[in-house]
Image (cartoon, rainbow, N blue to C red; front, top):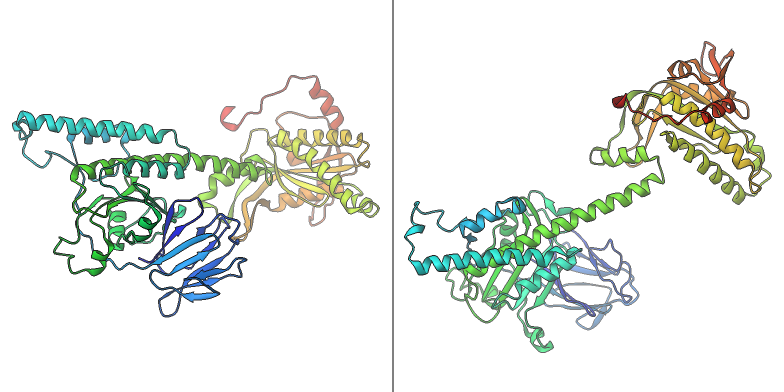
Length: 572
């Protein structure tokens, strides 16, 4: 599998696998496939892509510091194995190893007591296909072990249980995936004979549950560490790190850790020059993960001794990889909760808290469409604002509107209403959507009264011109849901009820609140109001009976009463 080995200033070596034929971006931008965070790197520095002849090609995207290939400045060039690239202050080596097979493999064999411990509640997420020692023999065979054998078996169990506790503690206080990977590399490089450690995480979109049988996944740049930090000459002369694609696919598909033997003495691979040339004498590879969830791969090898790692080493290595997967899952889960909270807070700046909550709840199945629901619509409009705007600078108009909308929005939210949209110098509000309450009509009328009172307070401020507002309210059935296109949608209501509420607002005079008889009949308690002559509204054949809410009297009467709790239908 082609790859880049990346060395940057003050950083550990990283390895980035070039999977499939998708283009790879290199740059300082967080959206880049390979992110190089250094001032010498442009936001989009270069693109690596597959040319028509199947070879990999690098193209400079007008970067400031350019690209040097084997010491020569290039704009675009085909890559050959072991090409040396200088990208800003980063040195990158292109490798294209051709390893075709798995050298050998074994499964993890753990003591029965240890397997039972993994199956307990704290570790019930373990996916490892472990085989308990003695589970494949007849009952009673374990009891025929000699005393020294039983002592060694018990020592082995205790050592693994102790390791499980130590690894769990070592990873428990870490707060980022990067910290976990570095700590895990510290642990596995402590295994006797481990010369190099290699941690390769899946890209975020592929982490977790999924079908890994078909190889449809991609990795982030990997972290490469040496057990004993070599001198520059030793690092330079170290054989290329090679993990065959077949090994990666087998580990990702099955979740089974692999123990790789010495290729030079394995008759199945003694003829493979590329394997022998890799210099690997012994290695282990295991997935980060728990049960059906995968997060990446962990790998260690030895370059000088064949059959360095034993079954006991594989057991230890598998336990560390398993615990690392649990820790990564924990940190990612916490980060997702924090991210959702940030997104919800940002969303609440654009829509009401209730709509933000509904959008967050529907995020996995967000689609266009609506449903019928009875709601109360409130429209409010500043009277004479167009003429006023002609005499005031645009910057001041923006400030006036923002101050007005802030006051009105606070009132609507206080009465559990939803801001459907701002309409130039007015606004449209919903009561009863997305969630209905038993007193939606009453909440809308009370909100309208408080909006008029809030505007009066705003008018007492010297920084604003005198504003006056008309409000119309109507109750009825609407179709409410997500309207628009798949790329841009609004949560809104449509229907005749919306039109009537808007027409009532047009009929309302300054400082006036008009409601329809449908709203009046929906009130759970009477409010001060007076009937007005029926009005012929635009678009309707029959006159509509309306009432004017005496909002000052309503506010005064409410001031003399203790506040009433707002109950949902389930709480009545």
